[in-house]
Length: 567
Image: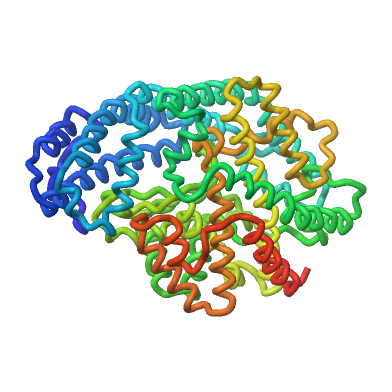
């Protein structure tokens, strides 16, 4: 029983993995008399309770599966939700949308309160096709297969069996031979699954193109822009972002690479030369254990804001984090909202790297967002558009930079901050490349594998810094396969670029007026998804824009901050 948010429509005991047990409650909603706006609001609350309970059940099963991809029972329980429960549920939830849009009382609802909901439901109705349900199920199963294969990857390195995140530590050591050996081991291990990943993606891209055709969309790009509720920008805006990054960020990235090459005393940079400290200092090692990582971030939040400290402390005490890297754990990191408890859960693969600190700050930003909007009774409004959800997380990374001495000496804290800001410059070209690659893939649905590889390499000419890949051409060709989003969350990557620019605007305010920036940040997070995207950015003190006029001054600001930090 959920004590804080008790059920009022569903019974306390209900098998949420059994559609036959759940269906009567959908039927009850469909048969209800709704005459007034008050009736309809009650109906929406009950519908939201039902959706929250189902969503939480699916999230719990996903968390269990990703925490241990070798647990066959957890895998089967998640696949049951994907392959059996959700296909049975989707037609019924389409009927709920039809019922809602057809209710005359909807005209009497507060337009300011329900306008975003109306818009979202209308698009969902526009895209719904019953013959897409099976295709969506197949795509989910293939995505889970990709994660299982990735999670099983380990490497024997100098007498140890290491996961891929654990191996990454050796890419930061001063000894170049060790770095090359580690990078080579990683690349060769990934190549073992290259063909299977190609096959998985061929199937995924084919399924996605069929979904788009079934929904009367010109291609999957049009379909996904509607599906992601991208009402406030277009593919042309994304292409303008790609061009702006190429013209205004790549010169900075290239200059940083040249400084690195010169400092390392190399003729050319190789793929294993980017993780090491350019001045030959020992790698940053902020913690030894996942417990130390959590405790250090708690101290950062305590200095940043007492309420954030309380919220993160409650997560630690409640066991709502799984942080360490281990064999069989799915790759990557995420924050999942348990929609009925209205509590967050953080998953990541920490291996003792500074990037792990950034990742936990990032995912904590998502968790703070989830907590800030948990008061809203509508589940739809407890989730912000992903472009703004990533503002919450990337801003927290930047806020945390001023308190990295919780992990390091003063000198190493400055070094870590530099590493992060340089990483921002380095990340934007990768975002542009991954996004542009997906634009190409889904507007060329009949492409071959060779054409796909060529498209990826052509984008490298725009977004790669000068690097010698001699002898490792296959690893370069297939480097896109390490990006989980391409397989599991198609087109979900430009959001990181849009959000990074929003986060930098908030950070710029924070450098001048920390209290104002924090207040804006928390006020915007509390809105959840109840307002259109531009209004969410505005509430946070930022502007939704990602063209050259926005990027150029922000890159200048980052450059100024870097100039004030020791090398």
